[in-house]
Length: 119
Image 1 (tube, rainbow, N blue to C red):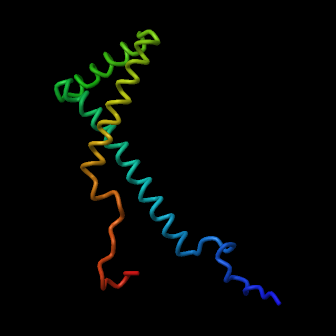
Image 2 (cartoon, rainbow, N blue to C red; image 1 turned 180 degrees about the vertical axis):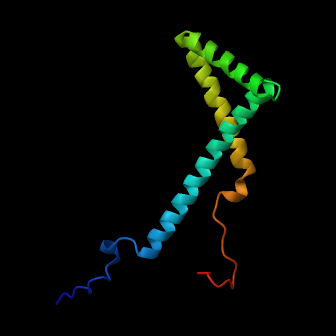
Image 3 (cartoon, helix red, strand yellow; image 1 turned 120 degrees about the horizontal axis):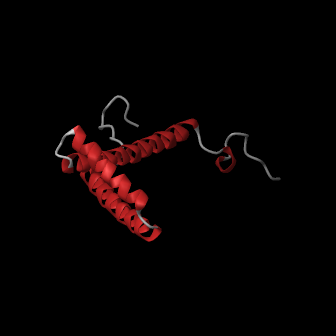
């Protein structure tokens, strides 16, 4: 005679438990936060670059941004594509450098042995 397990004990059908969902969401939110902060940091570095070539003044920054946008809008499609490739490569290099410098923040901190919330 075949007996069926009691309802709620079959893990193949039950899905994730509440604790497992909490862990999944915690890691997902931590990962999204890392990606978002890295993106904002790299955009800030691009702004810092334009601020630096503008002589660290608001007028110089706006002048450099105006020069940049005027040249980009006036460019033909081939030159605009080359610029986008250069920008993508620079963005990847900056992102890699930022992630390398923040390597200790990639994984969430682990609780110490004996801590009240360990395990």
